[in-house]
Amino acid sequence: MIIIGERINSTRKPITAALEARDADHILNEARRQWEAGAAYLDVNTAMMRSAEAEVMTWVIELIQDELPEALVAIDSANPAAVEAGFKAHKGRPLLNSINGEKERMDALMPLIREYNPRVIGLTIDDGGISQDADNRYRIGAELIELLLENKISLDDIFVDPLIFPVSAELQAGNVSLAIIRRLQQNYPGVHTVCGLSNISFGLPERKLINQVYMILAMGHGLDAAIIDPLDRRMMASIITTTTLLGQDRVCRNFLKAYRGGEFNLDPVPATAAE
Amino acid sequence: MIIIGERINSTRKPITAALEARDADHILNEARRQWEAGAAYLDVNTAMMRSAEAEVMTWVIELIQDELPEALVAIDSANPAAVEAGFKAHKGRPLLNSINGEKERMDALMPLIREYNPRVIGLTIDDGGISQDADNRYRIGAELIELLLENKISLDDIFVDPLIFPVSAELQAGNVSLAIIRRLQQNYPGVHTVCGLSNISFGLPERKLINQVYMILAMGHGLDAAIIDPLDRRMMASIITTTTLLGQDRVCRNFLKAYRGGEFNLDPVPATAAE
Image 1 (cartoon, rainbow over the protein chains, first blue to last red):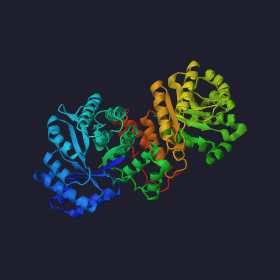
Image 2 (image 1 turned 30 degrees about the vertical axis):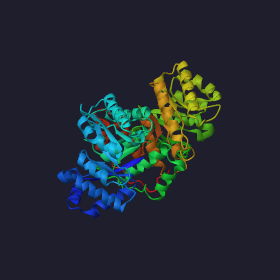
Image 3 (image 1 turned 90 degrees about the horizontal axis):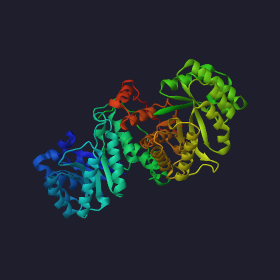
Image 4 (image 1 turned 90 degrees about the vertical axis):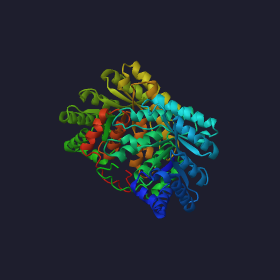
């Protein structure tokens, strides 16, 4: 399972404040804790810095990689200037979060993808908007894969996000995304699928419980990457256990290591754990 | 999800003692609590009563149905005399737990099945023993279904148990049973699949966590019945949440009812929750 740590995101107020103040300690602390908790990528979103987005992206990436030379960043931006600044600053191959099927965004970002050869997240949305229809979202994902392959990005470097609607609004929302994940994995073996999960539980109580259960279901259908908070210990315990049950943990080594490390000694669930 | 409550089982010492003493209060208390927690069937196993197995089976079934007239029993025995005694005592259609592909067992139980028309659990084991091979266990399950259909048991009254090996002993054990469940549901739409889950976690710590996660995965592959302890509140919370996420809970009614009923106010997980 490829964990993309979501915490360094300028839509979170403490992060905005830390970015504005160039508070290196705060950002590094967030980076280090996620890295130590098992994140393969640290997502960095600096969009709320507006005109300084590109400059702050550069600052954060250099800050993180100076301190954690092996850490990789998911450059989370739709702004070509910030994306390019991130690509330039990054050592090793970053993950671009994200492209989608919208022509304008694609035209702006594809030249940078060709030049810098990052790994890429593709969202299943296009100029027709976000569709609730499984066939439609699958089609957009398949078209994105084909386009990236034509541009010399290999299947192992492509992550497709099936997108998720709230189950409170649409009874089949969970099943639709599970079906898209399974179909992408079957038709493009080796491609990655990735989700930000929290939309599934929108409008309901006990959101953390719902997100956790949906993560397990999605992994059972082939999801192999997720944008989450790696400091959420219950979520991480679910992921480790699921990986073991799906036959991806020889002699249960990771499970037993996590057990011995106390990772299943969880705090009580508060009555209303909604985030 | 069809819950079969597993607690009234003579392999549990307090139950053996209660059965030996014909302690109606103890047995009724176990029955009532499971029934109120949502069990559709109450499993009754009196095998440890040996020569009195049939007599005690009759006593327990009458006891339960006098107190809870709508409760149904899963008659858990391989002993034809106890099975027949159970069928005779039971009001409404019981569930037989279980037949399998062994010729001797089948020859003894099939005449009773034809006479009493119960619902039936079929285990994917035959005279060749228990196979670790998915194709082999699927084949046994399919043959059991065909045989029961020939004997006028309808698909909706057949529950196939794919059996589960410990993931600690066999890396693919979890995947094998998931594949059997999916294949049975695809090829015999309307048939039920059922599991006793706890074998999956044998030999590992944190067994309750593992069982819970495997339940979610199995439901994601089509499992629609389970032999569990309905008083295990974490397991029940997982089942309710999974049902909602799989689109089987219109307007999230059951999820919200469970939430309002405090069913997600869970106690802390003890550090070593192995059973």
